[in-house]
Length: 511
Ligand code: BES
Ligand code: MN
Ligand code: ZN
Image (tube, rainbow, N blue to C red):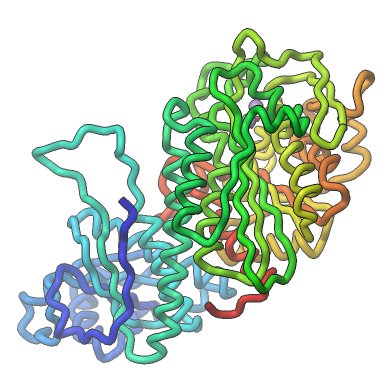
């Protein structure tokens, strides 16, 4: 699966005799189609029939061999896809998103006609650089081409579409730069697809051990080192949070460590992802309706591992260390109980008032360990941490909470560029007060008000004043805003944003 090859070449229209040639075209301000000398003959016909107006994601498929006058086109089919009016895109981010969206639409057309190879003709860039257009289209096509049918029987009569095998961008100048952009687009999209794959795996097939195996395999083919902290080492290190959450489970916990250390480095970035492979709630058990979705409680961990994969391919000049605390949250006979007191890696003790507030317990140990071990310049953690973030922001923004304005700003900008928007919520001592305990240093839940903030206030006790940002992706990790390139299930959110953020921190301009 996910083996789409993306190439950039100077192929001419006439020489491509394959299944599909794609033209993307915008509308002029008066609503008419903005054609060039390649598309004009087609546009003339389409306007006569009123079949295509080039509005956003408007499509029409044509069969040029049937038109004598169109003999310049060798392909069996032509797909025209609309981009709407340039004036409706106020900024770079919205233009990039239009091309991603068009990419998603292209992938849907390919699935409908079972087209595995296509050429995309260079059209209007809506004011972007052509390289940016190619990156966004590639992201959209590869993300939109995603399928997960591993556990389904093959329908022999009507075999499923096996996905797009080859995308070629036909360009006549800047070939080298555009090739890099195409590579970046596919690298980002394939990493996000890898995160979706992990999330789609059911809880019985994706345990902490699978997280560890995946990371080890990835490290064999990428310039990163992988080590796994197992249960015995956790006991020695005093990782009381991760061990406590794991107490009710039959499957041992793992702390996955991935380290990308280039020779030239502009500082160390620590990424931490919640790898909770199934969240039953533990003794404070969740209601059964919808509980199956709690297999997705590992999406933060999946995003971080997948981002590391893309980062190792991107090779930025910054050390990036990723930690993924992984376990499920079950209610076996030795499970953690409300009222228990645990001790974290940094010595902070916590009273457990709700065993369903487990994400913060496993993240706390990873954060404190990462701070001590790697002395990072900044920390970003990603977690499906609270239902409360869904009440506040729905499925369209992830929450961001941070002790550092510059870091928050960089992440919000990266998120905007990738169309993975972040909305900042405050921190503060009033909220920290909600997690004060009578018996321990803190307690693990602060009541109903501001649930997303009190969860972050818990994490804040473990970062030692290092610039830190917490992304709460509970509302966006699956069921994210409907888009042509976002499927119904897991979205792969945060992968592209993290890679973009690291790139910026490492001051990469073009690679
Ligand atoms: N994994 C859940 C958060 C969640 C809920 C993610 C719904 C996605 C969809 C987390 O472990 C949790 O259960 N949080 C509790 C915290 C509460 C007990 C303080 C919550 O949000 O209800
Ligand atoms: Mn929970
Ligand atoms: Zn959880």
